Length: 203
Length: 212
Image (tube, rainbow over all chains, first blue to last red; front, side, top):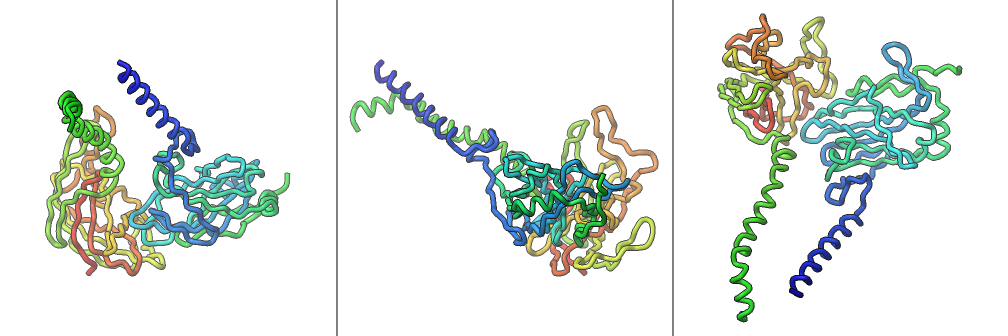
């Protein structure tokens, strides 16, 4: 009887210890565990980084206040941040559904769906430009994330690229002051037109 | 072995015998995730053929009405490089620089009642890289929803909702035999070795072929 009681106590203690270990694991999104965490690769602006499914190069980040649309210019009360990327898919075409901007305060800004990015084909360098609509204080120290998807399930046990865009306080101020109107990236084969095509007039 | 140990083994003999089986079942019960997350997400199970010969392809699948299948015969007649892309309207378009355009000649035979709609096509090179039809440029005659049937006569389309029939829109009846010539873009140095065709993964048709 006494031995049976001791066994029960031991089993419960083992379960509690297991739970404590699980809870102590890094847990970023509340749903993540060590068994589901992505493999985060740190990249550098201007350098090609090899992920499992594609090579990704951040060419540059650039500011804008408006983007030329079908019916005039689309502007924002905040700021636009565009990141020009070159991507080479590896063995098969790949959809990268996770372009995010990670701000210093921990906020995550998803790429604006008004400028969607389709599938990345194989055999060719594909130039894409995710567009982020952000407040001024999200620009300094922003980190670009490129992944196969936005949620933890899509990133589960897979490569995720983080690239610090290198925007210090002065650069962020410059970005926030921009009133540039730019053209959307409509030529993934040859790349976007980088130079602004106009200015949003002061009100 | 002491008497108590023997006694313990005897008392727990059924549990001990069942233990490996239960452990195996616990692992196998999780195996469904291999099916969902890995096996069914890629091209795994092939029917093989050779260029110049008809190969019969049959696949069972599920649509809104339930379980059905498609059967057809395909022949890869050849792959040739083309220098311009014919357009449905207007002048042909030049091949973008840094790429090579390959036209895949295909012959088909299928009962007009069979649904061929929604096929995907790709070329695979000697390094195993897959170049998919319509992956590269949407505007270079790559907007056909399917590279495997006559554009205006797709035949029966799969029903999207229960209660619809597997029937053909009047005027879109497919002939019993037809040809197609989809164009796939590849890098200039790619050595193409296979033509791939598929509907629902993981099954696919793989035809050994080379550029003539």
